[in-house]
Length: 176
Ligand SMILES: [Zn+2]
Ligand SMILES: [Zn+2]
Image 1 (cartoon, protein in one colour):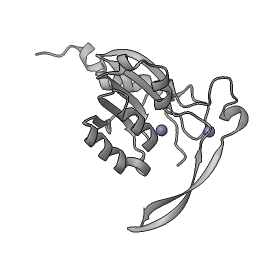
Image 2: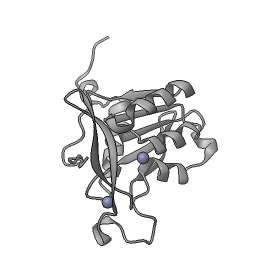
Image 3: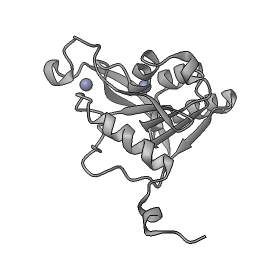
Protein backbone atom coordinates (compact mmCIF):
# COMPACT_ATOMS: atom_id res chain seq x y z
CA UNK A 1 0.00 0.00 0.00
CA UNK A 2 1.31 3.43 -0.87
CA UNK A 3 1.54 6.03 1.81
CA UNK A 4 0.37 9.49 0.91
CA UNK A 5 2.22 12.58 2.18
CA UNK A 6 -0.63 13.06 4.65
CA UNK A 7 -0.02 9.66 6.24
CA UNK A 8 3.55 10.55 7.13
CA UNK A 9 2.49 13.64 9.08
CA UNK A 10 -0.60 12.06 10.58
CA UNK A 11 0.03 11.22 14.22
CA UNK A 12 -0.49 7.71 15.53
CA UNK A 13 -2.92 7.35 18.44
CA UNK A 14 -0.21 7.02 21.11
CA UNK A 15 1.41 10.26 20.00
CA UNK A 16 -1.95 11.96 19.64
CA UNK A 17 -3.11 11.18 23.18
CA UNK A 18 0.30 11.73 24.79
CA UNK A 19 0.46 15.14 23.08
CA UNK A 20 -2.89 15.96 24.71
CA UNK A 21 -1.60 14.77 28.12
CA UNK A 22 1.40 17.11 27.75
CA UNK A 23 -0.90 19.95 26.70
CA UNK A 24 -3.03 19.33 29.80
CA UNK A 25 0.09 19.27 32.01
CA UNK A 26 0.84 22.90 31.10
CA UNK A 27 -2.14 23.86 33.33
CA UNK A 28 -0.24 22.68 36.42
CA UNK A 29 1.00 25.39 38.76
CA UNK A 30 3.51 23.31 40.71
CA UNK A 31 6.98 24.43 39.56
CA UNK A 32 8.52 21.11 40.59
CA UNK A 33 6.54 18.86 38.30
CA UNK A 34 3.87 19.31 35.62
CA UNK A 35 1.91 16.11 35.11
CA UNK A 36 -1.00 15.58 32.72
CA UNK A 37 -3.26 12.54 32.37
CA UNK A 38 -6.09 11.67 29.98
CA UNK A 39 -8.65 8.89 29.97
CA UNK A 40 -9.33 7.22 26.64
CA UNK A 41 -12.08 4.72 25.87
CA UNK A 42 -12.01 3.25 22.35
CA UNK A 43 -10.09 6.28 20.96
CA UNK A 44 -12.56 8.64 22.60
CA UNK A 45 -11.27 11.19 25.09
CA UNK A 46 -13.31 10.92 28.31
CA UNK A 47 -11.39 13.07 30.74
CA UNK A 48 -8.31 15.19 31.34
CA UNK A 49 -6.52 16.10 34.58
CA UNK A 50 -3.31 17.61 35.90
CA UNK A 51 -1.65 17.85 39.30
CA UNK A 52 -2.88 20.74 41.41
CA UNK A 53 -4.16 21.90 44.78
CA UNK A 54 -7.86 21.32 45.54
CA UNK A 55 -10.18 23.82 43.84
CA UNK A 56 -10.45 27.15 45.64
CA UNK A 57 -7.26 26.55 47.64
CA UNK A 58 -4.05 28.48 46.96
CA UNK A 59 -1.79 26.52 44.63
CA UNK A 60 2.00 26.25 44.49
CA UNK A 61 2.35 29.43 42.41
CA UNK A 62 0.47 31.40 45.09
CA UNK A 63 1.44 29.71 48.35
CA UNK A 64 4.68 28.03 47.32
CA UNK A 65 5.29 24.32 47.22
CA UNK A 66 4.54 22.34 50.39
CA UNK A 67 7.82 20.53 50.77
CA UNK A 68 8.40 17.40 52.82
CA UNK A 69 11.71 15.65 53.16
CA UNK A 70 11.89 11.91 52.83
CA UNK A 71 14.69 9.44 53.16
CA UNK A 72 14.93 7.14 50.21
CA UNK A 73 16.99 4.03 49.58
CA UNK A 74 18.89 4.64 46.33
CA UNK A 75 21.69 2.89 44.47
CA UNK A 76 24.78 5.13 44.35
CA UNK A 77 27.80 3.61 42.55
CA UNK A 78 26.22 0.15 42.90
CA UNK A 79 25.83 0.64 46.66
CA UNK A 80 22.57 1.12 48.52
CA UNK A 81 22.54 4.49 50.27
CA UNK A 82 19.99 6.48 52.24
CA UNK A 83 19.43 9.70 50.32
CA UNK A 84 17.34 12.66 51.49
CA UNK A 85 14.79 13.78 48.90
CA UNK A 86 12.31 16.63 48.81
CA UNK A 87 8.78 16.31 47.51
CA UNK A 88 5.87 18.73 47.08
CA UNK A 89 2.69 17.39 48.70
CA UNK A 90 0.42 20.38 48.01
CA UNK A 91 -1.00 18.91 44.84
CA UNK A 92 -3.45 16.13 44.15
CA UNK A 93 -1.73 14.01 41.53
CA UNK A 94 -3.03 14.11 37.94
CA UNK A 95 -4.06 10.44 38.02
CA UNK A 96 -6.05 10.93 41.25
CA UNK A 97 -7.82 13.98 39.85
CA UNK A 98 -8.60 11.97 36.72
CA UNK A 99 -10.22 9.26 38.84
CA UNK A 100 -12.23 11.80 40.83
CA UNK A 101 -13.63 13.44 37.72
CA UNK A 102 -14.52 10.36 35.66
CA UNK A 103 -17.12 7.65 36.18
CA UNK A 104 -16.32 4.08 37.07
CA UNK A 105 -18.52 2.78 34.26
CA UNK A 106 -16.64 4.89 31.68
CA UNK A 107 -13.27 3.70 32.97
CA UNK A 108 -14.02 -0.01 32.63
CA UNK A 109 -11.53 -1.34 30.03
CA UNK A 110 -10.10 2.11 29.28
CA UNK A 111 -6.58 3.45 28.75
CA UNK A 112 -4.84 6.20 30.71
CA UNK A 113 -2.13 8.28 29.01
CA UNK A 114 0.02 10.06 31.56
CA UNK A 115 3.14 12.19 31.03
CA UNK A 116 4.95 10.56 33.97
CA UNK A 117 5.15 7.01 35.25
CA UNK A 118 2.64 6.87 38.15
CA UNK A 119 3.87 6.93 41.74
CA UNK A 120 2.97 4.02 44.01
CA UNK A 121 -0.21 5.59 45.44
CA UNK A 122 -1.55 6.55 42.01
CA UNK A 123 -0.66 3.15 40.55
CA UNK A 124 -2.43 1.45 43.45
CA UNK A 125 -5.57 3.52 42.83
CA UNK A 126 -5.42 3.02 39.05
CA UNK A 127 -5.12 -0.73 39.63
CA UNK A 128 -8.54 -0.60 41.30
CA UNK A 129 -10.17 1.82 38.86
CA UNK A 130 -11.24 -0.38 35.94
CA UNK A 131 -8.43 0.89 33.69
CA UNK A 132 -6.89 -1.89 31.58
CA UNK A 133 -3.90 -0.04 30.12
CA UNK A 134 -1.53 2.70 31.29
CA UNK A 135 0.79 4.47 28.86
CA UNK A 136 3.43 6.86 30.20
CA UNK A 137 6.41 8.82 28.91
CA UNK A 138 8.89 10.02 31.58
CA UNK A 139 10.20 7.46 34.01
CA UNK A 140 9.78 7.68 37.79
CA UNK A 141 12.40 5.23 39.06
CA UNK A 142 11.55 5.64 42.77
CA UNK A 143 8.45 3.42 42.67
CA UNK A 144 9.00 1.71 39.33
CA UNK A 145 9.78 -1.79 40.53
CA UNK A 146 6.77 -2.22 42.82
CA UNK A 147 4.47 -0.51 40.33
CA UNK A 148 5.53 -2.88 37.52
CA UNK A 149 4.96 -5.87 39.83
CA UNK A 150 1.49 -4.61 40.73
CA UNK A 151 0.54 -4.06 37.08
CA UNK A 152 1.67 -7.59 36.21
CA UNK A 153 -0.39 -9.01 39.09
CA UNK A 154 -3.45 -7.06 37.93
CA UNK A 155 -2.92 -7.87 34.23
CA UNK A 156 -2.86 -4.18 33.34
CA UNK A 157 -0.84 -3.33 30.23
CA UNK A 158 1.89 -0.92 31.33
CA UNK A 159 3.72 0.75 28.45
CA UNK A 160 6.50 3.31 28.26
CA UNK A 161 6.59 5.49 25.13
CA UNK A 162 10.38 5.67 25.17
CA UNK A 163 10.66 7.01 21.61
CA UNK A 164 8.03 9.69 22.11
CA UNK A 165 9.00 13.36 21.95
CA UNK A 166 6.73 15.94 23.60
CA UNK A 167 5.59 18.94 21.59
CA UNK A 168 7.94 21.91 21.89
CA UNK A 169 7.37 24.16 24.93
CA UNK A 170 5.01 21.74 26.68
CA UNK A 171 7.67 19.76 28.48
CA UNK A 172 9.65 20.97 31.45
CA UNK A 173 12.57 19.77 33.47
CA UNK A 174 11.59 17.75 36.51
CA UNK A 175 13.12 18.41 39.91
CA UNK A 176 13.63 15.05 41.57
ZN1 LIG B 1 4.34 22.26 44.36
ZN1 LIG C 1 1.03 9.97 41.94
